[in-house]
Each structure stands twice: as structure tokens, then as C-alpha cells.
Length: 92
Image (cartoon, rainbow, N blue to C red; front, side):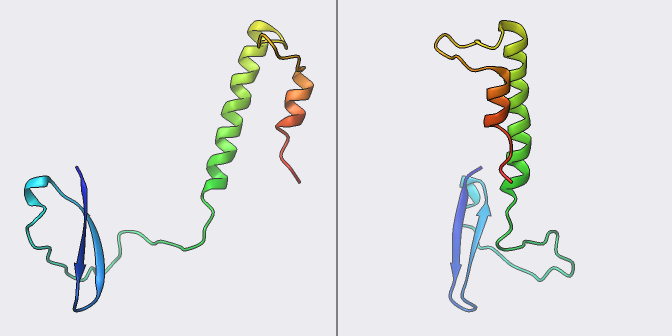
């Protein structure tokens, strides 16, 4: 479903809603929610947690290739397992 952006003059606010094309011009009625369904925090770095998982996945992929094809698994590459591990070591 597409997203549409709606604006209000009084009170001034913007709402982004996921709606079907047939419903895009229907008015949006807002009501107060007693307990928020989620909490958003500004300036948080959620990307770091994902980067750690991606790094482990990439290293696991390299490990599989090295186990199957040896340390020189690329045609032009001359990297040892130790050199690859050193390159992916987290910076302190």
C-alpha cells in the first residue's frame, strides 16, 4: 500500500498514513490514545546493532569460502585467513 502525507492547519501537524488508493481522499479522524503503542527515541544509533550482525554474517561467509576453496578463494586475491580476520577486527 502506498503512503500519503496529510497536513492540518489547526493544530499544525503532518501525518503520514498508509492507505489504499481508493481511501486516499477520505478524511482522517484523529483521537488521543491513552497508552502509546510505541516509544520513539531521537538520536539513537540502532545501526550499530545491525552492523555487528552483518559483520558476523560476512565473516561466516568468508569462513565457508575459505573452508571450501582455501585461503585464496578469489582469482586475484592473495589474502590469508589471518589477514582477513585482522581486516575485520573491530576498532577499539
